[in-house]
Image 1 (tube, rainbow, N blue to C red):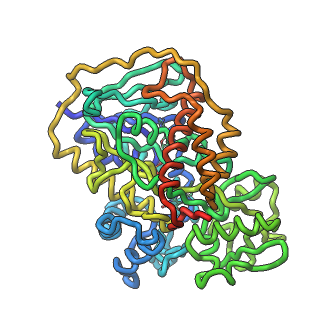
Image 2 (cartoon, helix red, strand yellow):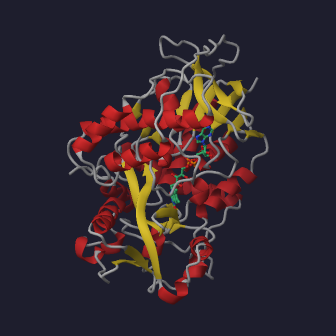
Image 3 (cartoon, rainbow, N blue to C red):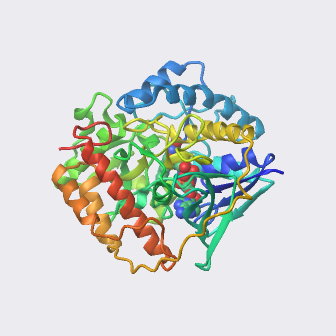
Length: 488
Ligand SMILES: Cc1cc2nc3c(=O)[nH]c(=O)nc-3n(C[C@H](O)[C@H](O)[C@H](O)COP(=O)(O)OP(=O)(O)OC[C@H]3O[C@@H](n4cnc5c(N)ncnc54)[C@H](O)[C@@H]3O)c2cc1C
C-alpha cells in the first residue's frame, strides 16, 4: 500500500513536493485559503542560480555567506547552490520558461549583495506565480483541500514527544476535522502577519511554527527576520513589494530633500544587503524624511516589471510622469523556523518542514535575495527521496484524541500585538523594549493544545503571541547585532 503523505501549505514548497511524491504516495495538500494564496505567488525578483558560464558556485556560495553574516550552515549552502541548477534544468525540460533574449539566452537579473547577474526570472516580475502555477499544473494525483486551517498535530506518543501521525484542522465551515498520515510536511511559509507592515500574503501568520513547537519540535534562529526596504507606501500602509530587481535595473533611493543617501552609506550603494538598506531607510523616516525609489534610470519599467507597474496604476500613480515611488520598509522573510536537517526532517520523527517556515541554516542571519525559491527546489528533492526510501506506516496505530478543553481566551487585540511587535522586534531593536514585550506577552493564555471552542481568528492571534514570545526570547539571548538582528 502507498504511504499517505499530508502536506500543509500550497506555496511552492508544498506544491513542488506534492508533484515529486504524487506517483509513489497518496498525497493530500491542505491549505488555509485558496490554492494560489501564498508568498510564492508574490515572488517577483526571481530565482538565484549558477546557470551562466560567467558565474561560479564559489561566487554564489561566497555571496550567500556574506549576506548571511557567515552565520549560515556551510554544508547546506554548498548543497543548495550546487544541486539547484540541475533541478532547474529538469523543470525547464518539463516546459518551465524563463525570460530570454532574442538569441535564446537567459536574461539574468541583478539583486542586492549578488556579485553577478544570476537571477532567472519569468514574465518580468512574475517568477513566483509562473513557477508555482507550472508545478501545480503538473499535478495528477494530488488531493487539495482549500480553506483548511491546520491547527495542531496528533501524536502517537505524547509523553515521549514522539511520532506524528495526523493533524486536526478547521474546515471551511469552521468544523473540526482529523486527517491521518504516515508522513506530515509543514510548508506553511513565513510570519509576516506578526507585523503591521509586511510584504507577505494575508494567510501568513507563523501557524506552522506555533503548532510544531506545541508538539515539541525544535526551532532555530528565530531572531532573524528580514525587513525589505522598498514596499509601496500608501497612507503609511504597505501595498505591495517593489522588487530589489528594480534597483538592480538602475533605480535609486532618494529622500524628500533630494539626497540619494544610500550612495554615502555603503560601497554597494542601493544594492547593499537588505538589512543595511532597511536600517538606513528606517533611520531616514525616524529623522522625518519621506523616502522614494527614483526609477528615472530604469529602462522599459512597465515591460520589465508588469506586476509592479499594474499595482502602482491601481493606486493611481502616474509613474511615467514623476518617476518617484513612495516606499517604506516592512517584514519580508523569516530566516529562522522549525529546525531541519539536510533531509528536511525535524526533531519529531515523521514530521518534515520545508520552505520559509523551516530553518535549514542556508540563509544565516540574513537571506541573500532570490535564494529562497532555490532552497525550496533542493529541499523538496531531499524530502521526497527520504520519504520514498523509508518504509514505515503509522496509519493503523491508535491515536490519542485531542481532549475537549474549555478555555475562555485571554488574548490581545491584533492591532496592539502588531504595534508592540514592531516596536520590540522591528528593524532596530532595544533590549528594554524586548523585555517589556515579553512581560506583556506572558499575560496571555498558555495552552498546550488549542481548545476546540476557539475561532480561527483567536487561534491565529494565539499562535502569533506564542511565536512572538519565542522570537523575543531568542532575540534577547543574542546580545550583539548580527545580520538582520540589529540591537542598539
Ligand atoms: C512579495 C514577495 C516577493 C518575494 N520575492 C522573492 C523572489 O523573487 N525570490 C525568492 O527566492 N524569494 C522571494 N520571496 C520569498 C519567497 O517567495 C518565499 O520565501 C517562498 O515563496 C516561501 O514559499 P513557501 O512554500 O515556504 O511558503 P508560501 O509560498 O508562503 O506558502 C505557504 C502556504 O501555507 C499556507 N498556510 C499557512 N498557514 C497555514 C495553516 N495553518 N493551515 C494550512 N495552510 C496554511 C498558506 O496559506 C500558503 O498557501 C518573496 C516574498 C514575498 C512576500
